[in-house]
Image 1: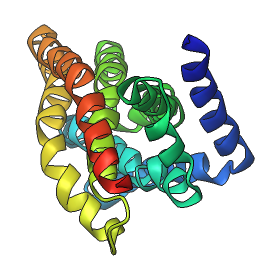
Image 2: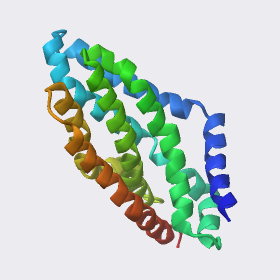
Image 3: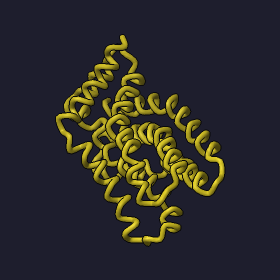
Length: 222
């Protein structure tokens, strides 16, 4: 039975591999936004260290959001999503497989790229490690929340405008905990509290998001 879930992941990865520009767009957006702030604000290292955690996290958040429209839209348009709904397998687990694929393609590359981009903000080695850890814990939460919004806007006109209105308020707690962990590490405080809250948010969404997304998909397909 597990083969069907791996097949969903493999299919999503192959589809994006054939359209490499989808990954490149999100990565380039992340790099450009995070790199423009030092040029626009100030070259002062003290100021850059202060704004760095927030800028990097907001850039990663927006880059993840760019790929949300493609999460279910293609499958909805070609009828594949309806076949998943009619399948004898758990739709929640199938949705979880698609969310995992989204994170592999949209979240994990940002985690790996973030230390290089963060060097522009004169961060310490400890802050860089906390940044990577916070993104590693927090970006799956962004995918879980984004999946709910993507499912709710399936088949809706102007979904590209509606999606940010739905998902950005939901991203606020993840943004606060993620950026707060990096800021705490830079000021000599313990980042454990923010990382724990970030992890707890991710675990809660792991339990809730696939079910809520599956319900929204059923409504959209019907």
